[in-house]
Image (tube, rainbow, N blue to C red; front, side):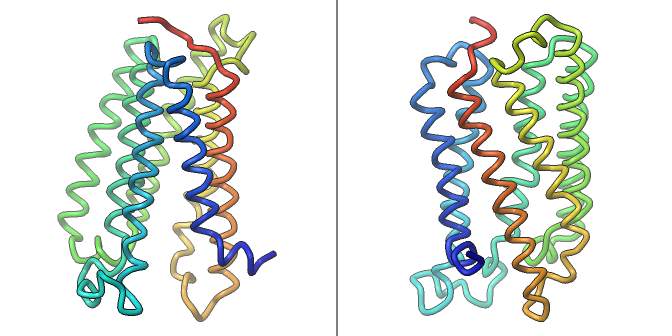
Length: 235
């Protein structure tokens, strides 16, 4: 089992991402007049980014991108930082700005996004060389705080509304539950990246397992949510 997961980690992760994106596209007509349409765009964006991130496979072993070997692009840390650790946080805060009703909550989310984005870009500029070789814990932690803020504001809004009676029909509930749990599970791992090396293969595999099952949970929840939910607002 361990060998199977190790050999098929990328395929399984990409598979659940594609499943969620395809489900969203098939049901796009159902959500096209709601904020959920932006979420479907995001799922497609994730699949696109995942495919691009696989470019590192074609650098080693005389791949067609072997001319990148020895350059700063030999690893995809920079790509993952931009597209997920920053890009996903910016998107979700944008989505919650559409979902939330109270102007104060929208204000909090908006300026949390702006502050996070400005800080992340400045931090990258000041640590430009490291940007290509490692992930930045401070960006991951701040991103998790932004996501936590968005999710908490949403759940508070739901608790105060009649939607709490049929929460299981709300796509926003599935999105919020999935991303909140994913960030809470994954964020602590960044503090143990020092052990992520060939000298500690047990930790390497454990980290892969946690990421894999967290990804399966998140994208499966997205898929189920898209199928069972009902549009919450009309244009």
